[in-house]
Structures are given as C-alpha cells and as structure tokens.
Amino acid sequence: MKSIAILIVSLGIILLAAELFVNGIEWLGKKFNLSEGAVGSVLAAVGTALPETIIPIIAIVFGRGTEGHDIGIGAILGAPLMLSTLAMFVTGLAVVIFRRRRAHGLKVMADYSTMSRDLLFFMIIFAVAILAGMIPPAMRSLQLGIAALMVLSYVIYVHSMLNQERDLESDAQMPPCYFDRRRAALLWIIIQVIVALGIMILGATLFVESVKVVAHTYGVPAFVLALIITPIATELPEKFNSVIWVSREKDTLALGNITGAMVFQSSLIPALGIFLTDWQLTSSALVSATLALLSAFIIFIQLRTRKHISAPILMAGGLIYAIFLVGIFKGIIT
Image (cartoon, rainbow, N blue to C red; front, side, top):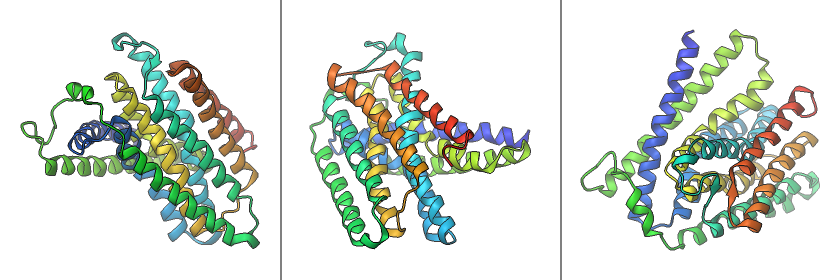
C-alpha cells in the first residue's frame, strides 16, 4: 500500500511541475518574443524530454558492455514510439474531454506550418536514423557522417523555429507568472522553469521506482517494466503539459510540445546513440520504429489534406500502441 501511495503522490508531483513549467515556459517565450510554435516545439519539448534523454545516456556510458548499449538503444527508439502513439492518444482524449469548452470542439487547430514541419522532419530524420542502423560495421565512417548530418539538421530546425513571428493574441490568455505575479522578471521566470524541471525529474524518478516495487510485489515480468512502464513514466511531463494546454485551447503549444520532442528524440538522441555505440538494430527495433513512423504519417496526412487534426486521428495512436503491446506479449517484439 505504501508503494501505491507513493505512486499516486509522484503523479501529483509531476502534475504540479507540469503546471509550473507550462506557465514559466509561456512567459519565457513572451520575454524572448518567440512564437507559440517555437515555445512548444523547442523550449517545452527539449525541457520535458530531459527525463527520457538521461536514461539512454546513463545506460550507454555507464552500462556494462553490450547489455548497456542494448538498453540505451532500446530507450532511444522507445521514446519516439511513445510520443507518436500514446502521447498523441492522451492529447486526443483530452480534446474529447474538454470539447465543450473549446471553440473548435474535436478539431485541433494547431499552427499548420509548425506541425507540418515537425512531423515531416520527424519522419525523414527518424527513417534516416533507422536506415543507419542497417549499415554494416565495416562502413562505420558512413554511420558517423550520417550522425553529424542529423545534428546539423536539428540545429537548422531550431534556427527556423526561433525565427517565427510571435502571435501576440495568445498573450491575453496567459495567467500571471507564479513566481513573480507583479512584474514577471526574467530571472524569476528562469528560476521557475528550472525548479519545475527539477520537480518534474524528481516526480518521474519516484514514479519509476515505485512502479518497480509494485511490479516486484505483484510479480510483473521485468521486460514489461523495461519496454512499457518506465517509458510511459518518463513521457508523463509531455502528456500532462499537452493536457493543460488543450484545456486552455492552446493547440499549437499542446501538439508542439509532443512533435518538438519527437524531432529532438529522432535527431540528436539517435545521433548520440550512433556516436557511442555500433548502432546495429534488430528486427524488433525496426518493427517498433515502423509503428512510430506509421502513427506520425497518419496524423501528417490528415493535417495536409484538411489543415487541422481531429481528436479521433490523434486517438488512433492508441490503437497502434496496442499493436505494439500485443507484439511484446506474444513475443514478436523482444
């Protein structure tokens, strides 16, 4: 019972941190005159991607030999799958729940150019990262060259996002800065964001540890923890942030928080994996990556044809993730 109580408390901690982070990151974007697309896809996405980014780095750098590399590569490939399927499903579910307070109901009216750019970038770069994993060890220099280009592509992406014009209409809906309600001084905004990230990482860590205890108590297999529960926990910040923004009808921030993390997790982090490991991917890794690309492609197609994304299409990611789970439990994906 104690572990379950800690589990519930850790979720509350993450939710509190998400609210602090959302508020701080919006004010930070205002101070630097950044667009909602840049705030969601760069600042929020990179910040909330820290928990799941730390895991593969620790596994690869401090893990023991091949086992550590395998865990690291699995974590690198697991994050894009989780974001493109389960995170999208949660966001779509939030749209359904808050549809009565939203002017567009079940339609997600995120910035078209930002979302199109994010999804297209993700599909291309992540596909390149996966193809790099099929290059034989004898052609290691080619792999390293691809990794360098992936890093450069992310730098170009960030530059283009930061140069977008800011939508001043969104400022009217911003609540006061929690740490400095009168002046919203830049120093206090930065402190709030840093504190929120620290609380977020603490909450995610508590969640993972309490889940391990609960799983051990009830005899849940270790591979379920490694492939399912821990990735869900580390992606909680993005999910909570997006739910908050959906409830306030800030769709560009809500989706940009996820798609920006997808861009980050498909470029810089796989590049790190290529630099630090031999980056030889198994057939199961290719299956999980294909599912991630499929989910992103479905969303991208509706966005390009209808100029908006519907809640049911976002929730379709849950079906794709369910296919992934079936593959795990039937031993297809190991």
